[in-house]
Length: 282
Image (cartoon, rainbow, N blue to C red; front, side, top):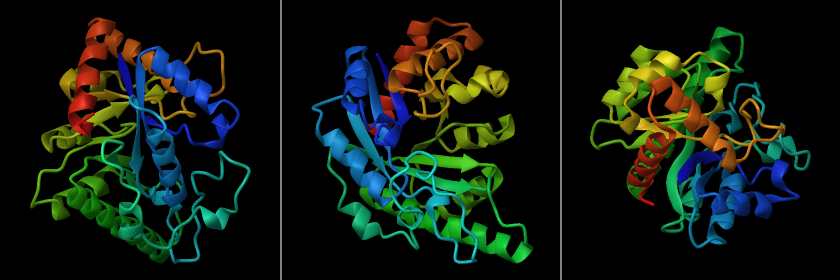
């Protein structure tokens, strides 16, 4: 058994065969957590999870690049690249409405708040706008951390080119309770990985490990603190004869981790599955 701890099966890539993709994964012994990126996608992943008795779960949250910055600068929303339908303005949100998201929670189906965090990949060039860009992302991020604390749910962190700021933000604002969660698609350095691990967080690895050299980090990270994921439909593993990733392909990530750590695939599958069950209480 494996658990794909980060998928986006609600995206338009699966419009024609979504149920078949999920069925394939479940029949192969692969469970999944579908992750929201704004209110509409969060609503979608919850509805999908509700249709299955077991093996399909949801996370709700507002992705940092789906936030209206208020500076005249607009980052590209995550869903624009994936679905042709829908207006760009429908993807972005001015603020995080915790009460609205809270109403999406279905016990046993919504297992995390995410994906939330900081993303500095596409940013303004002027100093003033950049400062406001970062301030706004941190403001929205902190509101969602508070929701996770209130609901007693773990967090799925998104962080791109912002690990030092994310760590600083967590250090300044998360002091009164034990934070639980995973840094999805980890691409930082070992010193940053250590700091996340010291906070009790897990590191999530996906097909990015076939593109970037993360071997040393994988070697040094205890298996007991790792999760596997696909981030599908993105990051298709090499050797898969398709341009669209699926939860069932998370096995290739587990296999590569097993090779790097020089342990059996079965051990990676067993421990990462237990890690996911423990973190998300599934």
